[in-house]
Every structure is written in C-alpha cells, then in structure tokens.
Image (cartoon, rainbow, N blue to C red; front, side, top):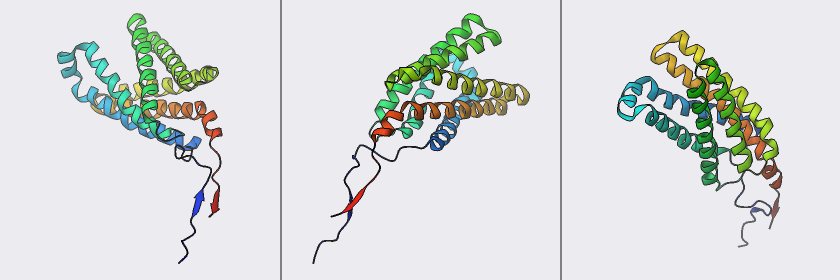
Length: 211
C-alpha cells in the first residue's frame, strides 16, 4: 500500500508560529495584565498593613514589583512572534518593569503629590519603553513607544485612582488595579506588536506541498 500523502510545510521553521495580530496583542496584553494587576492590587487591598508591618514600605514595594515582573512576563511571553522565546520575554519585561518601577517610585518619593505621580508616570514610561525597544534592537521606536506607554499608563493609573477615591475601601482598590492593568497592558501589547515588526516580516507565509 502506498504511503498516505500528507501536506508538508516546507517554509515554516519549527521556531515560528502564527504571529499575533494587533487586535490579539491588545486583548492578551489588556485582559492578561488586568488579571495580573488585579491580583497584585488584591494584596494591597487585603494585606497592605501586614506587609508594611512585616516587610516595611521598601520591602512591600519590592514584593509588588517582583509579582508584576514574574506574572506580567508570563502574560507577555504569549505575544512572542517566534516560539521558544519565553525566557527572552521574561528578561526584557523584567528589566523593563523594574526600570519603570524605579523611575515611578523615585520620582514620586522625591516630588510627592500629583506632580510626583505625573512625573513618575512619565519617567517610568520612558524608561520602560527604552528597555523594550533596546531589547528588540529597535531603539528608533522608543519615542513612539514612550508616548504610547505614557498615555495608557497615565489613563489607567489616574482613572483607577478616581474610581478608588469614589468607591473606596477594598472594592475601590480592586477596581483601581483592574483598570490600571487593562490600560497599561493594552499599551504594552501594542508596544510589543510594534517592536516585533521586523521579526514578523521575516516569517514567510505558510506554503504546503503534497509529497
């Protein structure tokens, strides 16, 4: 009996997979990071006093930053154009979010008040954008990504803050976390779509041949 003829993809590398669309990048980034942020903000809502008492203010901020780095890295690794890049995404996102946290917290503790929050949002967004752009070898895209992240980060943070002040208590804090994660996550998803444009173009369209 003759062997079955199966279509074989002769052009796809085993290292490639269908590239995430812009819409998919927004959805995964926004919804995925909203869930991550909701979880982190839940520790603020329900365990802030305990964390401050046992870890100190600095220790609590370090724990929250690490949680964002680890869980966020997992979410955004799903947007890799090429498979087998999870470690790379973890590393880039980890450094990017750490830089963002340093810029934000540093600016806020120096300036304080609303001005410190706006300055922190700006510096944090720029630092995050530069790390992401450098990690993918597209530093020329850093101004565009900086602006994108500043807009989405500020929208999520300040809209969430208004909701928190309006609702108050634990529900308000949870709403803040969800809104903050949704906006910033969408911005990050869009940013990762932009910086991977070169890799996306290098992946050929699927072509199958009967052999």
